[in-house]
Amino acid sequence: MIEVIQLDGLTMWLIKLISSFFLEIEETMIVQILGILFIGNNAEKLVFHRLKGTGEYNKFFGKGNYNCAGCGTPLYKSTTKFDSGCGWPAFFEGLPGITNRSPNPDGRRTEITCAACGGHLGHVFKGEGFKRPTDERHCVNSVSVKFNTSASL
Image (cartoon, rainbow, N blue to C red; front, side, top):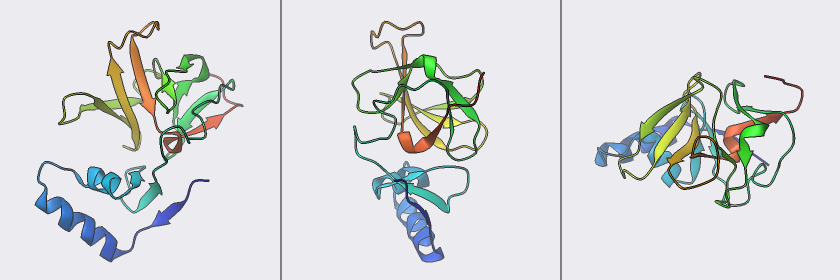
């Protein structure tokens, strides 16, 4: 079950205060450190982070599409989903123009966000050797997407 919470002004102030001490860490990263996953472009709408392998869609392979949990924008076709063994849903490609990519400061991975609402989706990794057309793995948080069986793209 996903728990959506409203943050009060004091909690938001605390997040801003903490982030001011870590100039290289964005507020959304601070929120993740506190165990909450940012979804959407509204910093007051947050969802608790799930542990590896416990996400609703990790081992789910139904036919349909995965939409952004924050705004409903279609992101991935189920035909691009594969079991990478990473503990989170993995896709080898998204729909054209649906994500923004930002390299993480650690240099090992690239964050992907919804192009429509800015919600954090997960990370994309290249060159890992998976036998997929793009040689990419979009490692997506289950709480960042909603499965839709009725949509066809």
